Figure 1 (cartoon, helix red, strand yellow):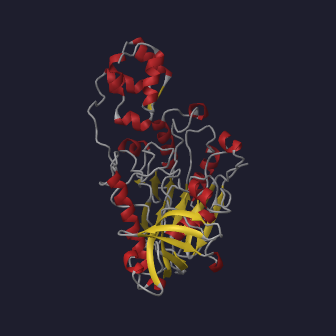
Figure 2 (cartoon, rainbow, N blue to C red; figure 1 turned 60 degrees about the vertical axis):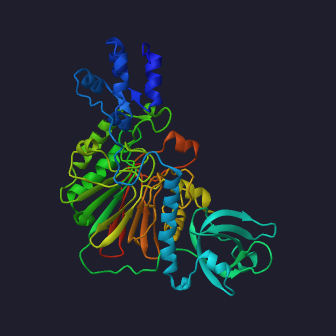
Figure 3 (cartoon, rainbow, N blue to C red; figure 1 turned 45 degrees about the horizontal axis):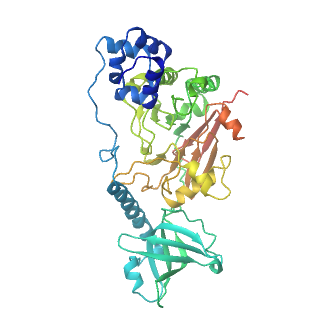
Amino acid sequence: MLFEDRTSILEYFNKHGILVSPEALNMILDRSMGQLIPRMVSDEIVSLGYLDEKEVRKLLRGEVKTEKQDFEVYLPDIKVNSSVEDFRQMFVSRYKKLSKIISASSYMRGTMDIRTAKRTPGEVKVVGMVSTIESTRNGHKKLLIEDLEDSIQVILMKSKGLADELILQDEVIGLTGNVSSGPGDQVFFANEVIRPDIPYKVIDDSKKEPVYVGSLSDIHVGSKTFRKDDFRKMISWIKRSEGEAANLKYLILSGDVVDGIGVYPGQDEDLEILNPLEQYEQLGEYLSEIPEDISIFVMPGNHDSVRLAEPQPLFSERIRKALNRNVTLMPNPYNLRLEEKNVLVYHGMSLNDMVELVPGANFETIGTAIEEILKRRHLSPKYGGKTPLIPSPEDYHVIEQVPDIFITGHIHSHSVGNYRGVRYVNSSTWQSQTDYQKMMNFAPNPSILSMFDLNSQSTIMKNFKSD
C-alpha cells in the first residue's frame, strides 16, 4: 500500500485506532517515510493509541522493535481470538461456581439436576442458568433455565408474588417447586427463588487503632476538566498526616486514572495532555508526593491504555515506570487481601447495564445496582450488554469470596452503603462535568476521598471540592 498524501496516512492510522500528532505527520511526509508506516503500528503504539514525533525519530534511528509480540494478559488462559467453545466454557464455569454457592445454602439442601427433578414427584430443588425470560398473558413470568445436562420451562406465579421478581438473563438461580406430570412438555412451577447472595455478616470493632483504605477512581489526568486543584488539596492533606490521614495505610485507584485518547470521537479537543504516556507521567508526579509508607494500588478502566474487554490486564511495564513510584498494579477486577480483609475492586463498566436492568436504579442512586450485583455474586450478570468480556475457561467475574469491602467507580457519582455487612462505595470522580454529561443531564459528585477502617465499621468521606 502506498502512503503518499496526508489523507491516506491518517486513514491508515485511524483504522488501527492511532491518533497522530501534527509534528509526527509532518516528519513522515517531509522525509518520505511512507514505506515505513506499517512498522510504526507496533503493539506498544496500538496500546497507547498515539504516535508522536519522538516515536517516529526512534524508527529513523532503528530503535523500534518490529517483531510481532504475543498479546500479553495477566491470566494465561485468556485469548484475543475466542471461539464458540471458549464462550461455552466460560458459562460452564459461571454455572459451576454459582451452583456450588447456591447448593451450599441451607434453603437448597437436597438440590438435584433438572433431569432427575423431572422424574421426581413432590417438591424438588434445582439450580439453573436463565436462558430466556418472558411474561405470560395472565401476568405470570416464564423462564427457561438450563444446567449442564438439561433444561426446563419455569413459571413464576403472580399469585405467589414471584412474577415481579427481578430476573436477569444469564444469572444463575436456585428454585424450589414442583414439576408438572401431565401430557406435553414438563413445566416447573416455582415456590421460591433462591439467589447465591451474600450471607449476613457482622463487622467486628476490634478496638485497635484505625487502619484506613482510601478509595479514588476516575481521576482523568490529562483532561481539561481534571480537577487538579482538588487533587492537589487531597494530596496536601495526606502529606500533613494529621487526623485520619495519619492512619491512612492503603490507597486504591480503581480505574480511569488518566483520560486516555481515542475513547470517543473528538476527545482530543477535550484534552490538556494529548500523549497518554505523558498523562501517566503527570499522574506519577502527583503520586510521588504521597508518603512512601502508604501502599498505592492502581487498576485500569475503560479510559486507560489497556484493552477494553474485561478482565483487563495489568498496565504495561512502560506505564509502571511512567507512574514514577513503587505502586502495585492490579488487573480489573481483582480481590485484594489487606490486613486479613477481602477488598474486591472492580472499575464498574457493568453498572451501565445494571442501571438499565434494575427498576428504580439511576446514576445518582447507584447503590441499588451495586446491591443487585452482590445479590447475584457476579460483577456482570448479563452477557452481551455494554460490558465487553473476553471468554475463558474460568469466569473471573464470579464473586467467589465474600468481600468485606467492595470498591467500584466508573459512574462519576458517589455512593456509600452496607449490604448484609459488606461495605461498598461507588467512588467519586476527580473530573468536572463533561459536555456528554451535560447532554445527559447528569451532574457528577466529584473530589471525595472515601476511607474504610479495616479494624471497625467506620467509613469516612473527605470532601475536597473547591466549588
